[in-house]
Picture 1 (cartoon, one colour):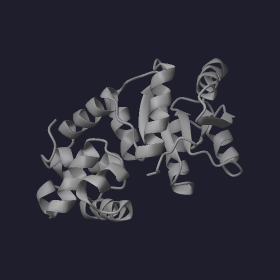
Picture 2: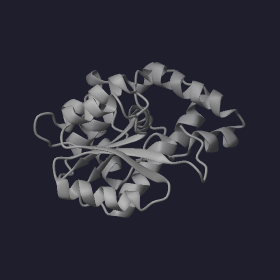
Picture 3: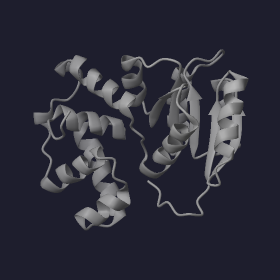
Picture 4: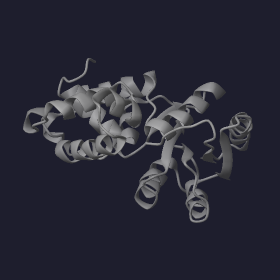
Length: 223
């Protein structure tokens, strides 16, 4: 998680096979003084080739594209460039698809009907807080939880968390940034990040979304 200041420029790339949509997003984001568009691609393969030379902070990734779609591209980005945040874009708001995306590492999910303001908020959100949840992702994650069988995932009672870990997990579920959490629990941001990594190990999750799902499943936060 980044400490955000007024001079920070967030570098953004977009991969989408619809030139008109790409142009619209680029135009609206480029008008923001804290955003710099650094790359555009029309499929996942083209994007991965660009990422060898250009390192954006955030990638807007369409799910349905020819040659190499977003579903195939997302795990590759996460494996090769774990620090790059990925916002998935789709025409559909299919809950099972959203849950799946979040579980394999997406930092947020937007439908293509999202306005310029929401796309900007999501870019800033994933850059500052690692994830950006909206009504769509929240509903999808909760629906995903309800339909999951216990055999598929670790049962909450198998994990022992101490009070500090529980407090930090709850604050993460409230979408507090690392710095906000650090201030609230009187620890350094680095210590908070270390506890967050320990939480991932303890709960067997690999992403912030996984931790949030775990917290809901364990009854630590209200649905």
